[in-house]
Image (cartoon, rainbow, N blue to C red; front, side, top):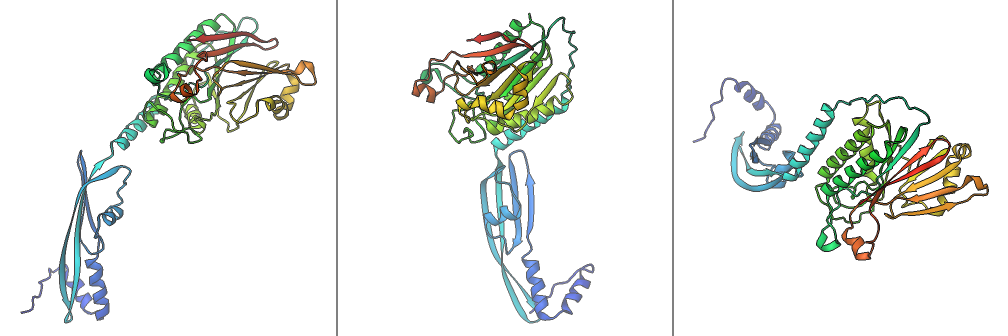
Length: 402
């Protein structure tokens, strides 16, 4: 006895059209129907469930996840099951048989990705709800001065353990040192007529350059936090420092890329541009050039991290890259980081009035395992600041020492 299905009135016209087609086309269409991929997904607080029903193409877990477009960076497979059976249909006396599969998978959301999403949501919330508070400074009485605040090589995110290196250091300790330095420098500089503040940012402000916890040159680092949280907290720390400084005078932030945070410092500068976009008290220089220059009256100051250029070449670099500024100024200095210790070199050109001083800035960073192993443990931990007279050059050198 041959079974003949009873088609509903709604589908009967399509069946009649199918029967009018040549046999090979009928077979082709039937196979297409049998091979159709029917994917059902559902999600609760813990799991994402994905099921393929009656498919001859989806036979494996990998095929299911591919067709369902499951992002395996956000989910990982908890369990899965595969069922198989055969179905047959007779078309014009010819029996067509196909193997059909049902593949079920239950996936769990990656907590690290959830953390990243939460941090990104917090970053978005910070920007959306930020409203700059403008500061109206009193007019300067007499000659104004420029304050340059240098907190180089903070290595925010670095993790040091006292039992191994002789001191503890993490993001909380780095934040305390940073704020203490800012507060101390503001207090010491407040007796001068400060009309402008220059705040170089970067210079290995971050200890690593990405999610792999490595420097820009792929050297592994001991890190305190997940990389996204390090960036978020570091950006907040810099913002807090700028907000403090701008109470004294308008602030120009100059981004200096380091060898630990070459890319991340650029992203930091770009985010600061967005953060202070409507703040008349703050400007951000995040140009992609490896060396930045600042002219203030008769002073020309070069800023670079110091890991790429030959130190002896810096005076001629300044003279060649900024010819007009070099000839228009009397005092020339380079301020560099990277070496974490205090050092000063004075170069003289042919013109004795055109000397160039190179200053190596100290660091507030803790001693990590590598530096301790190599014996680099005797550097004074410090932040430095300079007060510049527009015509007389540097008139004060301020220190915050631990």
